[in-house]
Image (cartoon, rainbow, N blue to C red):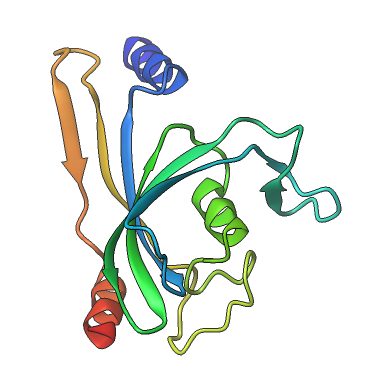
Amino acid sequence: NDKAHQSLSEQLKVHSIRRIYVAIVHGNIKEDSGTVNAPVGRHPTDRKKMAIVPNGKPAVTHYRVLQRFERYTYMEFQLETGRTHQIRVHMASIGHPLLGDAVYSSGKSPYHLQGQTLHAMTIGFIHPATREYLEITAPLPDYFEKILRDLR
């Protein structure tokens, strides 16, 4: 209903919705955690892609390493902002594109993926009617779990 929509829209606007994603990226991230703070907007020459551009909208992605493998890193991301393709663009910009991402990396993968290894794990927000904090977690999809088992 309108009341719920307005409440959730306001929470998005003030960045109070907690969003946690997990992904597998190429390479090994040296730091255990960090932040990418770089503006994201339309790519200057490829209008189907997003990119880090000086006149883009502010975008902040916090990351934390969950597990390192020989050629990949399993990571967690918390967003302060929610730009289109934000995690994909930010990770590619620091040299660690998402496994299976054909748009922001070579897309080469030993796995037959139908997209990148990115999963919206948790969302938390104030319930519009009860005003209680609500957090919902979605388990990893089977294909994602299988890749992690193979890497381990």
